[in-house]
Image (tube, rainbow, N blue to C red):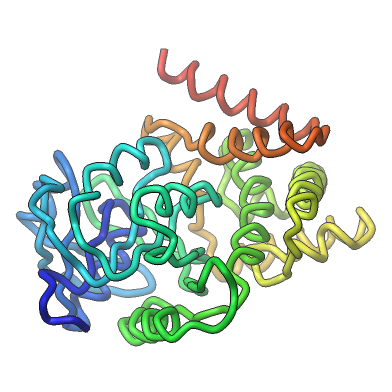
Length: 326
C-alpha cells in the first residue's frame, strides 16, 4: 500500500456493511477511516465497532464526521444507502483515491463513482454479504459468501486481485472477477425480486422463498429484469444471490423449485437473514426505491420495454415509503 496517503481504506457509511468491512480490515492491521455522522459516529468514537454472529470481536476505528477531513486513501469503499449518494460523493471530490468501489445495491453506483472520480479510478463490485445494525449499536454478521470486484471494462486486473486478497485475508470473503458487470446485473435481477417480496411480506428471507406463491412472483419479476439486462447487452450468470440465468431460462415450475430450494437453504444456514429493505422498514428508514427499482424502470422505458411487474412494484414500494413518511 502507498505510505504517502493518510489511510489504506476509507469507508463511506458505517451501517451494517460498512462496519463489517471496516472492522475486519482494522482488526487485520490496516489503517481505516470510517466516514459516519450523528449518533452512529458518536457510538463508533465511544465504543469502536462490535461485530457479532459469524465473527465475534470489537475493534477501535478512526471516525471522521466531516468529509473535508479526509484528504487521501488508497481505497474508497462506498457502503451507504443509495439515497443521497451523489451528494455524499461530491463532498469527497477534493480527496485523492487510488481506487474507488461501491458495495451498494444496483448498478447506478458505478455511474455515480465514474462521474465523481473518473472511470480510471472505479472498480465494479457486488456483495453477497449481509449484516444488520442492531439498536444497541452492535452489528450482526449474518452472511459471508463473497464480495466480487473487477474492472468495469472487463478482463483480469492486478489491482482487483490485490484488493480481493486483502479483504479475504481480513475475514470478509472476496474474489476478483473478469466479468463484474455481468455479475452485478445478475445480482441486481435477483435482488429486485428479493426486495419486492421482503417489503411486501415483511418476513425473514427463508419464509417467502419457501412459499410457492411468493416464489412464483419473485421468478416472474426476476425474468422481467433478465429481459432488461439482455436488452442492455449483458449476459446473465448463475453466480449471484440466486441463480439468475437459470431462473430466466428454466420452465416456470422448475424456476419456482429452485427458489423454494434456496429458501430451505436459508432456513438451515441463515434463519436470521433479513433483506436490508425489511430492516429499513422496521427501523423507519427510507427505502431504496428511486435509485434501484426506479433506475431499472427508467432504463426499460428508454428501451421501450414493457415490464409490468417491475413498474407495479416500483409504484407500490414508493407508495409504501411515502405512507410511512406521512
